[in-house]
Each structure stands twice: as structure tokens, then as C-alpha cells.
Image (tube, rainbow, N blue to C red):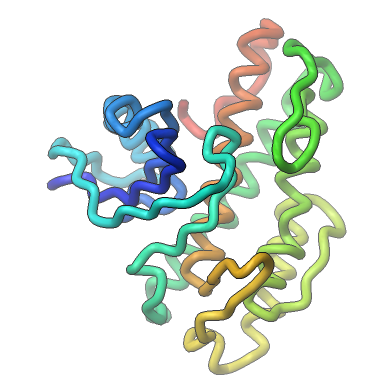
Length: 231
């Protein structure tokens, strides 16, 4: 089984997403660098999601050139596959993954001995200062909840912990009996969104910052931090 990927890039600077493993991704200064990392990423993702791990070649099925700060994980791509409506079964699978991801990020964050400890110098990106402590990473990840749901017209907030506010967002979504047929919407900055994309973006964004938390734990030597994402 090949690993089907979407290639989002600014020049050669690359974000590579695995289509069949929502949220799995690699970054690189070139496509070849990102491709080289992908089998290891899929292996880790498969351990976390408890799915089978393919052993085929990485195949690019969509080329999405953009002008964003890809090196800082700025993204606007909507996969061709994300333009299609979800079945009830597909939605339940992706929703449960998104909730499991939120729960695992929360558990990782809460396992830090010092949630305010840092190990890297300050750095600025397109969205401001890079979060450097576990607390800052967690708050940043939690606080996209209202934004992501809002891009498909669902009122949500960032109140409570990441699992609580994400559950509330899904509950608000499901109040509409026709929510599976939520149409494509042009959201902020001309970016296109769908329900499939929102679900994938939650998984992807969690994974970015869970990986950063895990790397921070290694630098701090905090052996109590739970590797909930099976990196």
C-alpha cells in the first residue's frame, strides 16, 4: 500500500501530509527531505491510532503550491478528498480520533513536572512568538477551537480544557441534522474549509504541538512526561 500524500510547498520548503492518516505530516527544506521522514511518521501515527502500517512508497497525489510560511507550519491547503461530504461512519471515526488526540495532548501536558519550564530561546513566526513551555504549547493548541469550528459556521469557544471545548464544538455542530452535508465555505483570508478539513486540522495541529512538547520533555530531562502520541 502506497502512502498517498499532499505536497504543500513554498518553493521547495515543504509540508507533506498523509491523506489516509489524517493529521500525519512531515516538514522539510525540500520534498525529498519530507518524503524521507514520512515512513517513520506513519509508523508512529499507526502506533498511536492502532492501525496497520503500510510499507509502500510515498506517492504525491496533490501538488499545492502556496506563498505562506511553510517552515513555520502555516497552511491553507484543502485536500481534493476534503471537498467530499462525510458519511456518518467516517465522521464518527474522525471525531473519535480528534477527541482521543485532545485527551492525549491534555494528558501529556498535565504530566510535566513544571509546565512553565523552557529549553529554547525565543523565536518569532507568522503567528507571533513560538510557544516555548508546555503550558504555552497547550494553550496555543487549545485556543484554535473557536477558530476551526467558526470557519465552517459553527459557534464554539475555547472555554475549559482542550477536550471539553472540543466536545462542546462537536455537540454544537451536531445540532444541525444535516451537518454531514456542511458545504465548502470560504473562510478567513480566502482559505477554503470543509468539515473533513476541520477534523484533519485538529489532528494535525495537535500533532505539531504534541511533538514539540515531547521534544521539550527530552531537553528538560523530564522522564515523567507521558509519550501519549507514541513518538
